[in-house]
Image (cartoon, rainbow, N blue to C red; front, side, top):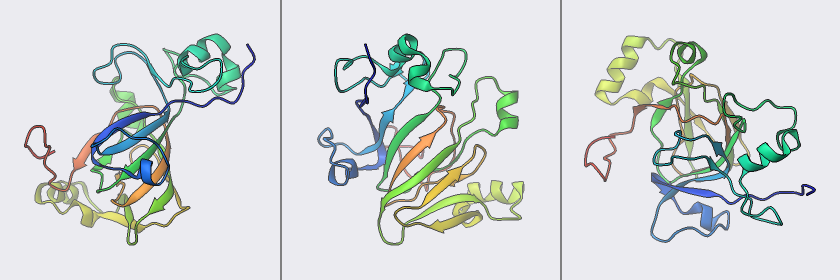
Length: 223
């Protein structure tokens, strides 16, 4: 069968910081009564990576005669006609990028993904670089990106303990159309009121540094 322009079915992910802008701004139909923080648009994860899933989690085609087939199935069948000359990720032959929309009704946690040195030393850790393109934002919105120059390890440790982490991270005002690259190892947080398209390395290795004293509704404990 000849390939054609493919559309994929999104995977919605409920988040404590999420909202409803995928519906009100992007025109998607969301499940009722839930705060949706992520819409995975193009994704391909091998077994055991996504919590609660035992098989491949891969985007299903939404249009045409290939509807229902997954991105991974098409990679196996069509090879480079799908992924071009960009290498797949060993050892599973995973598609090399993950594309999402993020709807931050509230601030996301301050977090960091492993840098190359850490990933080399820990087999279960993977690099996760990402880029944000700002689709829509509320007045006064900002992102946090990178430590203030001169910040020491001890200063950062104390700031985590006393809740003043934000004072040691660069706050950047944003506007629609801005684009930011966040290489692995960059301390960062997406601020509340921002809707972004995110292109990233398909990894889920994240270290949460500080979550603004937010309480997990499931456990009743600080996140």
